[in-house]
Length: 279
Image (cartoon, rainbow, N blue to C red):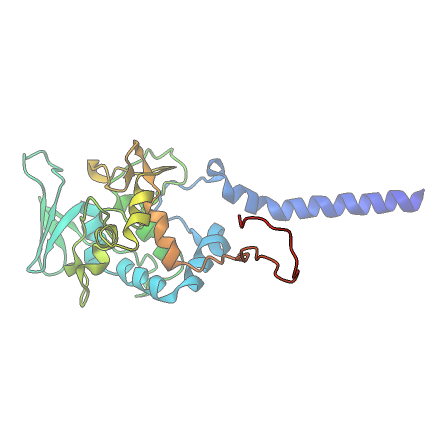
C-alpha cells in the first residue's frame, strides 16, 4: 500500500512540474495573457521562436532575406509609417494622409538625413539594438508593428501588434490596389510590389488567386490610414479575403502527401465471361 501511495505522489509531483513548465507556452497563445503596451518594443521571439521565427528563418531563405532587407530600408519603413502611396527618388514621399487638415495630402521632403513635413522630421529605424543589422524579433516589426500601419491603440491595450498580409496594398499589392513603389528598393522592379496585380491577370494562377479573393477568411484586417485594403473580403470589408494565403502555395514548404488510385480495369483473364455491357 505504501508503495502505491509513493508511486501516486511521484506521478502527482511530476504532473505539477510538467504543468509549471508548460504554463508559459500556454500563456503565449492567449491574447489576454500579453501585457506589452508597445508593439515596437515587444520581443516577439521570446514567445514565438519556434512557431514563427524559426519557421520563417528556415522555410525559404530568399524570402526571409528579402524581408530582412526591406525591414532595414529606412526609406521604406518611413514610407509605411507616414502613409506613402508614391515615391520620387529626387526626394519626395507622397501620401494619402492630411495629418494637419490643410485640405491637401502630406508630402514629405528629404533634407539629406531625414524626411521632413510641417516641421516634423522622421526616419523610422527598426534596428532597435543599433547593431547595424535586422536581427532577432526586429524583422517581425515590418509586418506586425502598428506604428507602420497608421493605427493607434490606447496605452491600456495589450499586445499592440497587428498583421500586414502579403498582398496588402503597401506591400505586394493586389488585384485592386498598388500603393507601394518599387523605386524605394535599389535594383528592384515593380514585379514584387505589384505581385498581386500580376498574379490576378495570370492565366494559370489567376483563377486560383481571384477565387480566394472573393472568400472571407474571417480574420480581421486593419484599415491603415483610412483605406479599405484591396484584399478585403468582398462580402465583409472588416475581414481580409483568402487571397494572401494563396502566396503560401509557392512561398512556404508545406508538405502535402497523397496517392492517386488507378481506375478499375476490366478483367480479361476469363475466356468465357458472361455477356454484358461495359459500364
